[in-house]
Image (tube, rainbow, N blue to C red; front, side):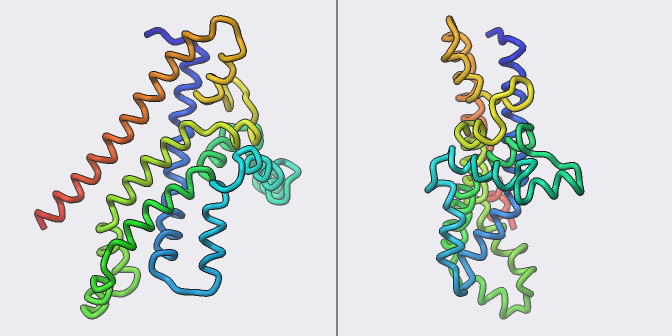
Length: 230
């Protein structure tokens, strides 16, 4: 299977964006999932709705919201560019942001369901043994929720890898800069004899998604083995 230089660039860029999106979203997803699963407070329903908003809105609208907020003249993007020199719009870094935002609800939901499946009696037992809330989270809750974390990482990676609407709206379709596999496929549908390129990219996308699933399963099995051996 021989790839063109543009296809190779799209593949490597997609991998970079998807991996960074998962890594950047992971700590926030774990924190929000824990808050939604274990805390009781006013506005919890509102927070839950805000987390899932990218799934409820059309992806193009999400991309437009990111452009309004993080564009060079946006409410946040102007100050990031002016004070720190950070630019997200029409850059590959913006594609990471778009992919992370779109994958975030799936990430949070998987981890939240895993945490909610942990009996609260375990929390009470850890507290009765003198475990502080932070230690209880790191030593008890997080290890037991690894299956949900692994599932969330897989879903987030797959979603980030295939993200289209928010990405093309926020960062456009710039070859070598923001053109991911999905955007490359979109481009190939508009040129003559693009079927071969589409087929190659489809195979790569499928292999990457299956690979992410295998890694996720390995993480779950390894965590289960560790728990049995302790």
